[in-house]
Length: 296
Figure 1 (tube, rainbow, N blue to C red):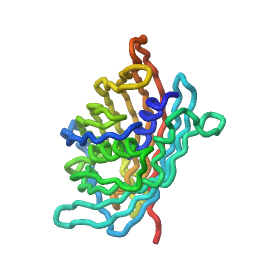
Figure 2: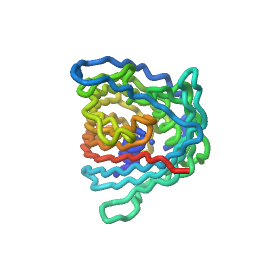
Figure 3: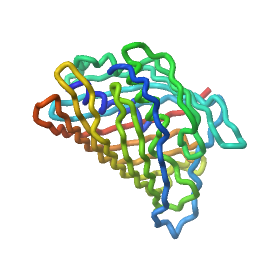
């Protein structure tokens, strides 16, 4: 599996929620949310972030990716801390740390593809602010990177800054749905990748006890990039990515942060190097992300 395909795999696994240094600034995402009906027969539920200053969470991302190159297992562990909450604006300051990232093949061996060291964000720390819908507000800063992984960190920083999945703007009833559309520009290997994403979400049901109630949100997301051109030793590399994702998110109503996301994606990466024929590489991915409060 090439480093470019590993990059697209890891970005998807880490970002929902990611080589060569890039100094290109990320541009603001253009996002809209539209209610799409349903839910006439239940009481409305307000889905929003209700963070507690000082609260800490463990995060664990596991991804299984199958493509023509074989199987890659991604395991990433990190933590999230609530640094503060502005009660007047409902903006929450969050620090996210990446503790470890492992890429392994079907036999459990570390993936040895050239350039994989540039994908290891272990030790990187991201500082951001989110609003009550879990959407990022303002710039995201990163520290703890090195010369090898700086570009990967910049791609992740940009994806944090242009988050694509948001909680609905208003209370919703069980069965009600809403749509988010986002246009992003993500730096990848010294180039800018324009992305367009549409996500349809639906409050499927409420689970758990009254004290620990979970909102179960089903979602379908379609993202596609424009072609990106990157200079390389074997000629110019041109690639684009299209992804279809279906998933389910279990969100704690108490804080809007803790919970579990499972999703399955079908990704088609179109690649061409120099004058060689264009190749289309399909991949299937199963991702599980858990965010668990740390009891203090």
